[in-house]
Length: 150
Image (cartoon, rainbow, N blue to C red; front, side):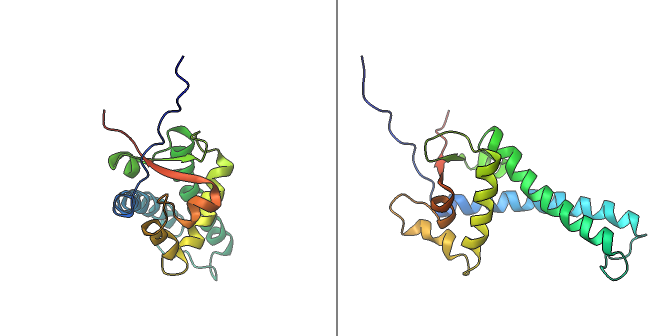
């Protein structure tokens, strides 16, 4: 009986993570633009201004946040990968190797905002961290790993 533990997956470095984030940002931007276009149909093409459409503007903001959370949440809880991550052979997982839950997703997204605030220093931390983990990886108890080639 083999009692050796399997090796830990290789951790993703910053360039590959940034490439995946760039791909995902393009997809997310397109989704948000289409949704904004649909909202503009409700205002006759006028800007969604809180002074003229306060309820619609609040609803619009809530929909935008829901789309962002949904984009990542559906991907991370199902396969651990967004389309951009899959392209660059990345997967996000919990420290124990299991898939993220919706709670993990919300925690990770919240801490990712903190990582962005000081000029992205929390993301750049991957360059000096021995486990290649960003601030939000550590704070949300997740990690981004490389998916082996098939």
